[in-house]
Image (cartoon, rainbow, N blue to C red; front, side, top):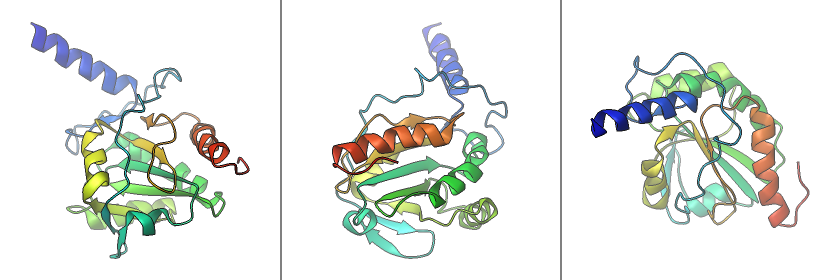
Length: 196
């Protein structure tokens, strides 16, 4: 009975957050989007920092943490999958948001199933008009972080050394622009920079 209760609670939480469990397979993801309660969408700020890693990008290049974060004061990393309806639903809005960011802020995507669905990942990003960088695999701290994420989409916000700046966003966002700006501004303020 306890096992059944735990399973039911996990399912309710996944559907309430408008997110997909990373263990879901294509075709099994929930199609109906339920609005996310603003008080529930915040993470617990307990994901690991991502200071040391190597990553492969969709364009075929390889980068280190230092190269990826570069001179950016704030980096948002959206973790998604090609089979996740909430992830796909927000892709157009992410693409538009990315184009509005100043040089010291960046939005990166990390497609967790891109190694086996590279062409589909590329097609989704092209259709959405996403012009930024998409990570398709990683080692080190970034691999640890992605493995610790339970629901996608999840977006984390880090500084130029990979230290988390604030709570993550879990699930598709009703007001993506405002939710991202709020967290990015936390990082910019901490760095003594102008807010968005």
